[in-house]
Image (cartoon, rainbow, N blue to C red; front, top):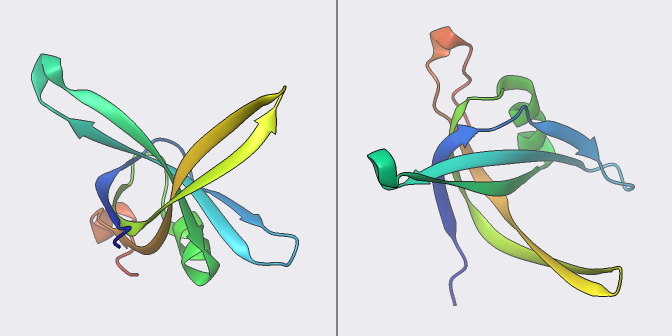
Length: 110
């Protein structure tokens, strides 16, 4: 079985760096991709999680509008709210490449 997602898009907001109760760093990002062209173009929004050392790098070097390449796996989460089951999806990234030019403040790395 294969569970792999590849995205090329831009951040819709500044990354948010947090720590879990056990002290692990996680960075949450919203990445926009588009489908189609002109009047038929549609934007899709993706929730991306980046963990550990990569999380700190994303929070340090990326900003709203930054162009990124993301490779990871799709993860679902379920919980109950007001008696209804809520399901969300996120991409857990194991590779993030920063694609903005270095002279624009970008960081090229993994």
